[in-house]
Structures are given as structure tokens and as C-alpha cells.
View 1 (spheres, protein in one colour):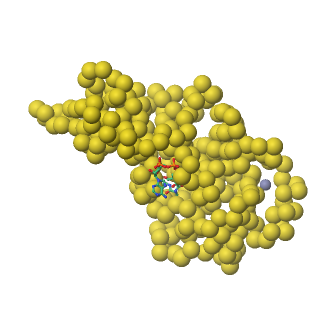
View 2 (cartoon, rainbow, N blue to C red):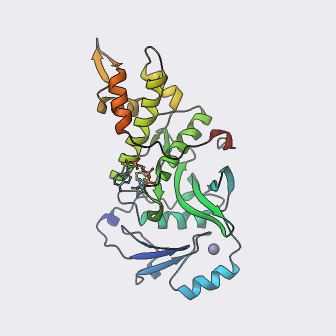
View 3 (cartoon, protein in one colour):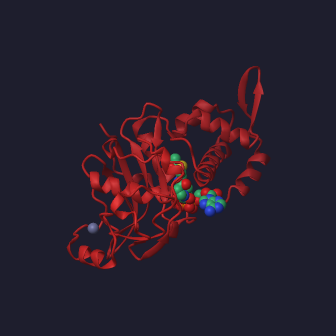
Length: 281
Ligand code: ACO
Ligand code: ZN
């Protein structure tokens, strides 16, 4: 369900309050019409219900008993936790999350049919509760082998490695499913940068360690990254040659080292032992 008109609509909500942050929004989001006259919205950081006035939020906070996203905690490492929320079991939460996310996503489909999706909500936890830093959504069943539909790191948390953590997490889920995956297209500029960065680091790390020849298929089996994404990444790094009608990886150690230096920091790692999860049936 795509709202084509969205692209031409002007931004309505200019700022939101969420937990201890006041955040400036980036794009239009199709909140219900009764919110059309609002410049600012106040979100409950736990259930993601939104309100027009601060006093409403304060009253809500007294009776809202959530301290984390509704759903199962499937990962915990230090203060970082990931919750899996089923859009069918938590429809309102899923819709609220989509409204919120659309404020920072431009060319993205907004699904009202949240039933078909799982939401993976990443939180920083302390004694006040689990505070959302970002999330990604995933179709329960994807014909196109998408392992991620939308990804967002909330602006106050951006550029700290959470985006790459979320991406890595989506591939860990694919590995557990025994499937390859790819993000839904189109990617935003920031989305593409983050994916390029993730793919580059993962592939360079393997090529660096691996002795002898390795094929794109083998890389795909090891990483759950779709072969096409591996090919475009290695092509952009100029590690591919085309010989006798076949793509061959030419991993010259010197070239690898140069790219690895340029690839920057690895970021937050997903500790796979701490992921307790079984694929959706
Ligand atoms: N300027 C330049 N490069 C950037 C920027 C930026 N503002 N933000 C991220 N990058 C690049 C960098 O290469 C960075 O790696 P580095 O810091 O090691 O150099 C890499 O992307 C990833 O950085 P992270 O800190 O791991 O990612 P972050 O937590 O900032 O999240 C995300 C990235 C999710 C794309 C975030 O920018 C965001 O939420 N943007 C708005 C929503 C969006 O565009 N989502 C993707 C849409 S496509 C899709 O959903 C399938
Ligand atoms: Zn609430």
C-alpha cells in the first residue's frame, strides 16, 4: 500500500519528543488527519503512542506500564537488547513505529498492513527501561528474498555503529534461516552507504583470512549476502576480473590491505552466542 502522494506532500510534524530527546523530523509522515495541525508530537518511548500535548503524555506515562517494546527479547549483550515484535500481535505498536519511522524515511513504502511484518527493535537499557535506538522491519515471508524492509537509527543515535549492527543482525537471522538475504530496494543514500560499508568489511575480512581461491557462491554461503550484492561490492573495490565468461575474484593482498585501511572502523559486533531465536513459521 503505497501513498504516492506522500512524495509531494510537505512536512507537517517538525519535531517530536521521544524519551529524553527532542528530535527534528526529516520528511512527511501520514499521521491520521486529526494531527494535521500539529507541529510537534509527543511520543511515549515505550508503546510509541503519540499525543498532541505534553500534559497528555505526562498523564499517559503515569499509567503506561511498558518499559520495553512489546514482544520477545531475543538478544542481550551488556546494555544492548533486541526485541522481536510481531506486527500481527502488536498492531498498534507496529503502526506507531511506521508513522515514527516515516518521519526519517523518504522513498519508502509505508505499510499499514503491519500483520505481515516482524519488527526488530534495538534498545539501550538502564534502570528506567529499554530506550529504542533504532529498528528494522522484515517481512514474515518474502518472495524476493528480502531480509530487511526498512531500517532506521533514530537521529540522536546515528553514526555510532548502530546501523551496521542492525544490518549485521539481519544477516545473522538469515544465516539461522539458512537463506541468503538482501535489503528491499530502493535504498536511501544513507542506507546504501551503510550497506556498502557492511558488505565491504565482511567480504574483505574473509578474503584477508582465506587462503587460495574462493567463489562468490562460497562467500554468499558464508555470509548470507546475496551473490549480486557481493558481485557489485567486489566490482566497486576492483577485485573482480572477467575471464572466459566468468567473474573471478582477484584478491591481491596489497589491494586488500589498502581497502581494509580505507574501510574504517568495524563498529558494534553482533555476539551470535547471545542471539536466542528460531525462524518465524
Ligand atoms: N554521512 C556520511 N556517511 C554516513 C552518514 C552520514 N551522515 N551516516 C552513515 N554513514 C555511513 C558511514 O560510512 C558509516 O560508517 P562509518 O561511521 O564507519 O564511516 C556507515 O554509513 C554506517 O554508520 P552507522 O553508524 O553504523 O549507521 P547509523 O546508525 O548512522 O544508521 C542508517 C545508518 C540506518 C541508514 C541511518 O542513517 C538512518 O536511519 N537514516 C534514515 C533512514 C534511512 O535512510 N534508512 C535506510 C533506508 S533504505 C532501507 O530501509 C532498506
Ligand atoms: Zn506508553
